[in-house]
Amino acid sequence: MRRFVFSVWLAKWRSKFEEARLERCRRAVLGQITGLIHVGANTGQERTLYAVHGLRVAWLEPIPDVFETLVKNLADYPKQKAYRYLVAGEDDREFTLNISNYGGVSSSILPLAHHREMWPEVDYSGEIKMVATTLPAFLSKERLRLADYQALVLDTQGSEMLILKGAAEILGEFRFIQVEVPDFEAYGGCCVLPEMNEFMKSHGFREMHRNKFRSMPGIGSYYDVTYKRTLWRPVAIRGTNHAGK
Image (cartoon, rainbow, N blue to C red):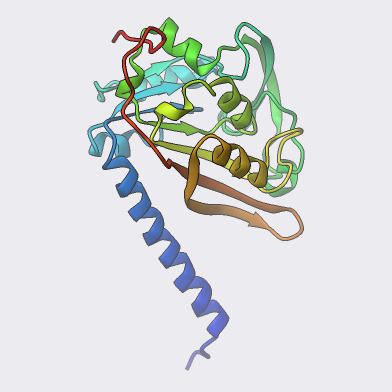
């Protein structure tokens, strides 16, 4: 007979509980919106999930070959469209985008720091120069209506805070914002979880759900954190509201 180990049982129970909680959060968020903007698209891994909920999606991905794959992957999803942009905190500033050896995953405008210890198989294998844009400028250039997108997803490997600061003028128009954020310096100079929480709180958002997807003793943990606007209101059409498509 196998010996019952309480700690093992507890770890499995917590894992199943967290998976169920994460699924409830996804349904709660995706069921309350009609569209979202996903910055840091990679190849659009969540496209089927978004399609199940009938969402309009604007995907933003800067790496040329990854972007081409994204476009192909979205061919059967008419409500989802890919845009090749590097989004940051400033318009018209040139950045060096470091390309990872992991299919573009973990590519960043920031240098690797303790990320190397958590994922030793990941390294930079190249770089490209790109001129960045802010999120408001992107919406204006592509003539997208902000009213069509009530949620924002950021997965840009350490530059999430830069993007949020560059989009400060429109953050209040989103109902939900999800960011990937560590509680340690994964990338050189990146935002860490306490800083993110404080920034989001100062802009009227509260933490709704936190999913820890990677952890290492002595290093720290990585999270997907979903924030909900405390006093959200549907966007009003005004001169700077990017009316268009």
